Length: 158
Image 1: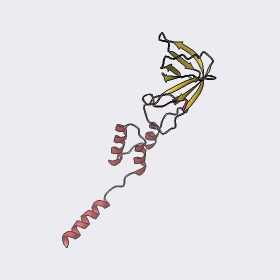
Image 2: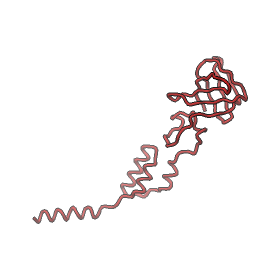
Image 3: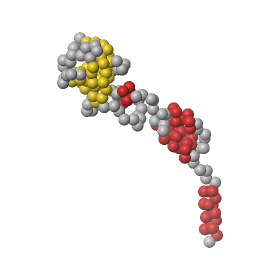
Image 4: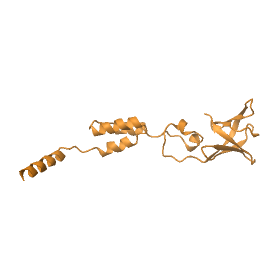
């Protein structure tokens, strides 16, 4: 009987000395996108080392790019996965068309984006033409000139 009483006192005293975990700091650690930095943050919280919550949150919030600025960027270009919805299409005007020796074209648009033609089909767009680029399947994009039914497959290059 004495052994049970002694054991219960030891167990009760161990939980009494346990320090509470800072839930707000743990929540801030979950916002970190890079695995190693997130692990370091969790280790600091569990070791009761102070972390700067505001700095952690501001460093790991996604960049404030608009849907149009992100449109056409691959995941490799974005470098981090964020919780935003992507635009399904953009409309722009052609500023410049550069033709390669192989017959494909590079389109520079008024929104600052550059798009390269991937297929060798004929597509006649000139400076000032209004174009529409739609998201296709499997991370592909289709460019259509206003007033035309013809579309070509394109890739963003900037």
